[in-house]
Length: 443
Image 1 (tube, helix red, strand yellow):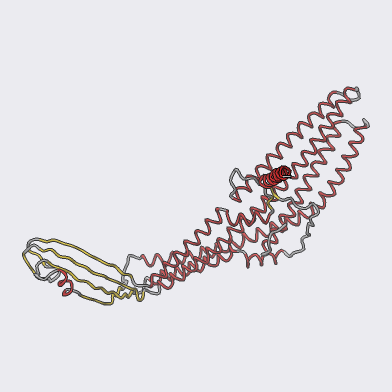
Image 2 (cartoon, rainbow, N blue to C red; image 1 turned 135 degrees about the vertical axis):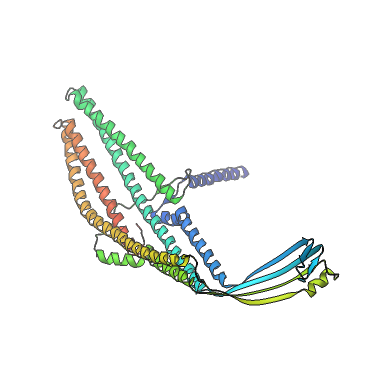
């Protein structure tokens, strides 16, 4: 009984080990949602944009601290010989003097033409702008993931079509060889069948290479290593290809309201307007509060070091006013530059609006075209399949030449490729239009 139990335990371990190895060796199947979420978290372009935003936040904190007073400590040790002024007592002496000076000083800007307030507001606007730029970087990655994902699926279906054609052409080669040996066809018919099989084999190799190129592109967007495997989830063949029933201008206006690049453009104008306020502030005077405490020691006195520090302890406080009179037109140039930058940012906003309209218009027109194309492509594919099936029957009966059969096969292949292209373009542009309206991309 003990031996039986040991044997059962041994086989249980083997089964469990096999199941574990199977689970480890099974590659992860990536859905579109998986790819998007992973890319947003790991793509270096998004990370870089986020770091720029973090730098802007640090600058904002630094600018807010400019309202605070500074504080500096100082210490000096000096030696003088001959006729000199004692740095502590200010007496004129002729002697060797050792002196020590210790002090703490502070200054705080009370008024600077509202420059500090405007710089703080400008820094906050920069933080907000960079937050929108992070969202823009994420959106760019999402669209790139969508495009590459659908290209990958399109290429994968292309491999299936190419492989089916190769199988069919190899069958035709075998049939042509038998007919050639039976003397029912000429040699050139057989060689044409061989040539078509070689062409289809080349097409399979090309399709597989294209697929691998799309795999590489998607892996780079996901920041996967070369050692990582990537297999994407296919779309259900029964997916409903939704007809486009949306108003183009409504989509455009929604895009203007929700896309982060528009908000970033608006903030760019506000940032440059604050820069103008900062520049104009340099025309106004600056008022600062200054203060210091200090003490010192001199070797001329017979009093000990500690006692001298106590006796010589001093304090001072005062106001400092700086009035700009002429600074070689530096302020005037800064004001003019800020005004020009405001105009540039306004032009850039117009350019952004045009770019968004172009994206919406392109996606909308391509979506309309893809809807019509998929209907035509589906009908063409069905007709080409029927024609190809009929051609194969005629070829088997010897009523059709190899050349005509190859023509029918190529026509059917082209129809299949046109159909899958229209299918994925329809999906792509519909999803883009949904995205421009603030809806999630999902298949």
